[in-house]
Image 1 (tube, rainbow, N blue to C red):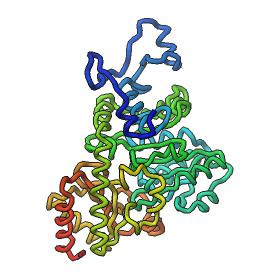
Image 2 (image 1 turned 45 degrees about the vertical axis):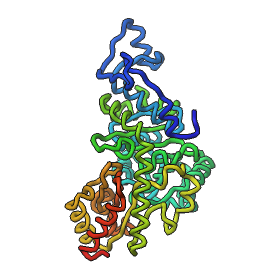
Image 3 (image 1 turned 120 degrees about the horizontal axis):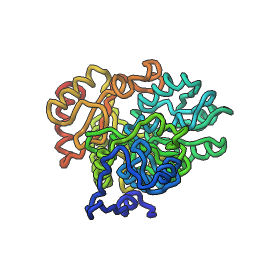
Image 4 (image 1 turned 90 degrees about the horizontal axis):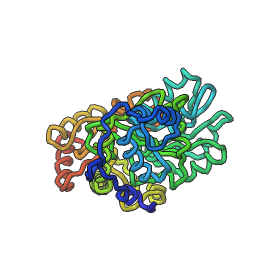
Length: 399
């Protein structure tokens, strides 16, 4: 295996059934056997290379999982029908009644809602902490804590997790470090920094075309086997299975991820620097003004830059909405949630992707009404985009 994540993806070569340059799609829900004993062996996980039923797994899903595991330097991976399907499976596989999770307070709203509102039904408790304070993280750990959960770069405040330091804390207390790396595929390699499990929403940068949802858990063979166990595996029993056609589609898009991430990052840095010079309050890990700029430089794979996500605080929700509507009207992007698209996407997180987080909690974490989250697209002439956005901001009095 190469030391470079993109090389690991590129080095995987699959042939289709008839010699195709893309692997054949296994468009079947169930699979036949010539001998009854093989079916039994497959059901018990003893017949490698045989397939029983597509909720367990399928060739198409295995191809995609293998490529994502290679990218994330893990032994294997399990794909799911959505990012939340991957996240919830991991949380419920590791934790049961009486267990405790230490989570970053700035995480995707769906994950926050699951931990805050849903897992208490199973008597699983979560402490939400400032993940940038290692002292607060360690202080929150109890005798029942099973994991530290965070995002490598948080949604939407773009706080950077010190994964190496968090890994040391996790190992000291014999708990797992689980990292959602959705914002920074290729840019950050959590496993190399000591993470135990890496999760992605494939919906975003990895797929890149916003035509499907998907998720993946990248981990050890032992952990993925436990997720898929027919008797007590969360991924098996909750059933968040990815469709084979979608897995094949995402695998094709994964092949261009390295090119896209470089362009997303280059464009985002250009806009962030220019808007900051204009006097706007910009948060982007590639700016020296970002509190975690130096930390980011110690953990990233430099050739992919600082990512495609930035935020601008325009003061009020009214101004944010006015600006986003005007930018969409001028074909500068879409007023839409999600990220990683070829066009720029913008939304006000407080009323969209983080709306599950109560207002008082949003205030505590510094998520103000006027913040716009930008997922910067693959624009060929980013200076042209900057000038057009600048005009929109001037027209409504932000600049």
